[in-house]
Amino acid sequence: MKDAHGFSRRDWLATAGIAAGALAAKRSQAAPQAATAPVSVAKVPSYDEDLVAQFQKMFDQIGGVGSQVQGKTVAIKVNLTGGNRFDGYTAGDTHWVHPKVVGAVTAVFGKLGARRIRILESANGRRPNAKLEDKLLSGGWDVAAIKNAAPVVEFEDTDGPQGNPYSTLKVANKPYIFPAFNLNRSYEDCDFFVSLGKMKNHEEMGVTMSIKNMFGVTPTALYGGREPMFHYGQKQAPSGAPQELDPKSNRYEGWRLPRILVDIIGARPIDLAILDGIVSTCGGEGPWVLGARPIKPGILVVGRNCVSTDAVAMATMGYNPRAGRHEAPYRLYKGPDNHPKDQLTPSDETFQYADNMMLLAEAVGIGSADLSKIDVRGVAIRDAIFDFEAFWKNQMPKEKPKA
Image 1 (tube, rainbow, N blue to C red):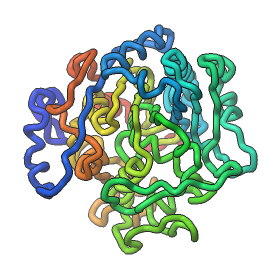
Image 2 (image 1 turned 90 degrees about the vertical axis):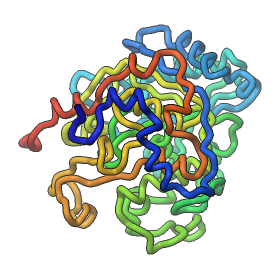
Image 3 (image 1 turned 90 degrees about the horizontal axis):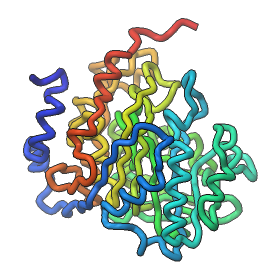
């Protein structure tokens, strides 16, 4: 029996890739062949497990990364969205990546012989000399333990240039909106780049994983608060920064932001995607989102191709990774009082819609979101599924809580 979104989450897992044929047929015959790579899935019930051994096993399952990191500089972009917390949880439990995951990954890279490991994230660094460690300490992280996990571990707040000129990174594939971005030099000065994200729902994009994690590489010291420029196109990039290809293109958030995300990963490719879904949130990316709730999926996902990794992770969340904009999770509850009405579709003030960023990335050849083409190793998707949408629907409040 199909649900309100037009598919059974269990049924499509058995026929992944076939039902998507109609959508794929609409793509240009000249579209580049999307890459694929093995993806490893693990069931991990808590952060107290031996995560070092777990990541060693998962890296081996995807073919190993030792030759890529030995003697090299490894940069890890972590996800530290927002500063609020759910009652009874740390930020790392639910909407930040967990410090034990970061520490374990750092330790494994150290064992593999990485010369230097750099942990990167935007941490409100528009103020001079901002330190990422300060934000981590405020979130209860044991920064010293992570520094001791490998011989050389550094932290950098990449919200600004931090004393160096920005690097201009050009989109290698055909760009959708921006041909290039100015980023902190740390995103260029590395040999192996990791997107370490939280596997969770997102208020505007439906889901956030390794690709959405990359939104945070754009420096607010240059691009401002990001939303006016990237979400809505209400202002243009400052002089000296790469400009939009077409300032008159669609300004709708659900059309615009997924394409900008694909442009970002085209400019700063991801060499390894790691997704923390041991504890997470459904209904939104953090406690500031109406209806967001803590959940415990108990999942880790690792892969060399970010599109394929996110597609597998999305499937373990109970979603069709080839879903259209009117299907879960891209049909998004907003409510007319939660968002400017001029940003909603004219015919509907209750929902807004987002395009599938994985299919957009697939269309320009970055990776494959077709489960039938992805070699899933470790735990089978059907044995790892935690239905985010069902849990959210059972918990969603009918109205905002009164102050």
